Image (tube, rainbow, N blue to C red; front, side, top):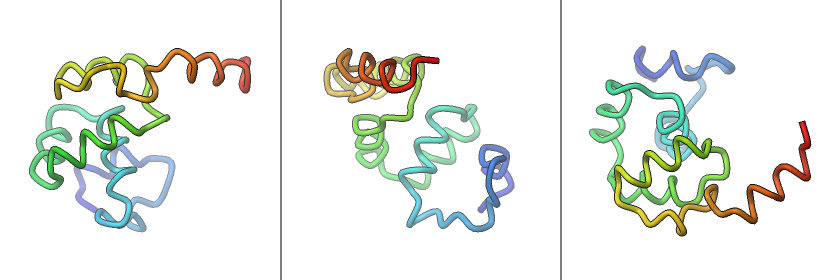
Length: 97
């Protein structure tokens, strides 16, 4: 794991993260918390179709991040699972805090 990415994985031992096996989690973390340098790294190391698949299928992105990246990658917002209203309502019911 590069020194650049270690900052994003503060909650775990970043050296144990395999950038290929855990690509979806790495992409998700960059989409949610990354800065411009992280995004450049992501674009150099993962194909755009993989990044957009993570964007579409992730349930862990904030509404704000998902909206931004959907616009950036020109993905219809109704295809982004974490932007679907029904899912948002379900999450509030499951965790009301």
